[in-house]
Length: 477
Image (tube, rainbow, N blue to C red):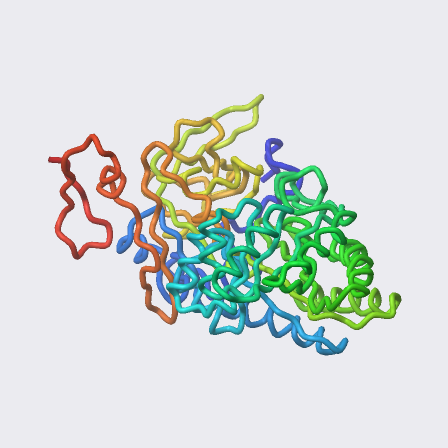
């Protein structure tokens, strides 16, 4: 069978459209002899029958193993160069109380970016000292809550935040640890909306301004400056961008040592993952070794001690551990200049995965309820929303007999899918379940029509069906 000319250059016609590529899907996921996909010992059809679709599914063993492996790799490599590391799980990727507990149990700290994320981490039992608080526009209430609950580090993002954090810390009788977020001027090779370290953007301050702001921080008795922070982007492959950014940061770090201690350096996160077979992310152990060598060499060249180094991975931990299950509603064959494409419409879309619409992100899809010997056809997996750009998988191959009622799975949706989910067209956000050792449990309840209508003050009453079902039906009275 010839490759479809509508397929992007990176997409390879599969010999078997049922096969699961290693590294793309959760570690425990496999196809059972009957043809259905199994994740965490639970079959996809059983998950869909119990919880409905769309459904976010997270392989707990995979997520925890990735967290532990990443922490261990970075600890080993930075111990080799005579220092320690702090690894923060970037909660913005996906945060629930249970996931927060997983990360804490695996030895990671947690990075939060809002009062809501802070509340989730605290509700999960996270000690304040193991939290870092980010954000370019933290409210006065958020800053006060962070200081009141003993957040370990607050990242200063602008000049005005210095006095705000100092005032809150003084009010609560503490000396607050702070980092200063800077832009290194390094633009990682990624989508421009994902890049966060070039200078014409909302985050941080320029490296040139750092000495002046650090002096202001050090002048505040209620603040303790612990180091610089930089995040050069997301979905980054390789270490070259980190190398250049670290070099620039350590030059300023060395100059700041003249005025006082600078015990830490935070190099951010953004480690990439595979969304398709064309993606080749750098293995974590290789990335850790390269970054440790870079920091050691830069410090040696400047004759300064190697600081404690912090990192903030999120996607690389939770992204590959998650999938989303959908049910196919309709299919539609189209002819584009003589080439065929099959539109496969699902019961979700951009309300549960906005990344394709936001970033042009690519994903991979497979039949989840069965296997098939049908010849593969080029498909575009479309959502049910009233937007022509409501596409979840722009291009992949599925067996040509895919049709209404089929269950499909989209890979690597653990990060930035639930976090970015919306109620567009009044769809409720799907539930999130964890699977482990043959059992599934609900992490986040899905939103029902009753949930959505309950916020509309023009509706007098919404009556939910009796409790006891995973996805109750509602009626309006």
